[in-house]
Image (cartoon, rainbow, N blue to C red):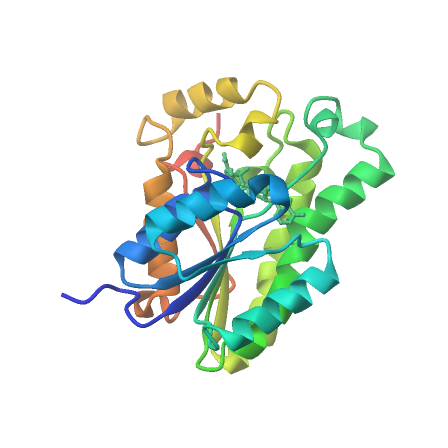
Length: 256
Ligand code: NAP
């Protein structure tokens, strides 16, 4: 039986290591027959991402720091040469200063606030603008969000505000790009132990709290997030745009 993403070309930004949600998504996309291009932010990550790309059989590995318009222009030019057409883009990128994920939100500096917004929210707009001209047959853009966008989660702070802007950006981008049959959605994942998550103070308490209270009484597996991304990237998700899809063992429905 052909895979759900057979014949599709996907750009996946945000693989840092094998624990990254983007790596789980790239693996699921390959399983379903997609060709994938991975990106890395800086030289420090290059060798790791190249090794993971080999393991996956990725078509290419390209450099891209999303804070640089020059990098984004070069990425778009490289993708235009090969593979030439894009069908899916996965934006799995976020960053905030560690101290802003530990002290009261009230203490957030102007620079820390703007940095979190630039990397974690504005970059979706910039990536969508760079990729959309290559999505000539329509396609699917997927970003990763978290419950801290709409609820106060201890220590998530400035990142919660950036995720709120990210989710609003999903809706505006969905409206702009819908006439080109490009769908834009977010997956709001339950907490998963990754390099980024380890930067949040007391993250292990969040994990144990969710496992106790979520309807499914467990944490989220990265493979579940990846399978939801397959759905959104495939024809099965053709009617879905502008949405935030929770893949969190049901935690978001709970009151106390
Ligand atoms: P991760 O493995 O650390 O991935 C974050 C990625 O963002 C890394 O590849 C990082 O690259 C990249 N990045 C940061 N600044 C960048 C820049 N300027 N240009 C390009 N790339 C940049 O952690 P993750 O948990 O998988 O995070 C992926 C996404 O899922 C994030 O949006 C995160 O907020 C979201 N999410 C995570 C959880 C969770 O509990 N883990 C839950 C819900 C949503 P470097 O490592 O090279 O800096």
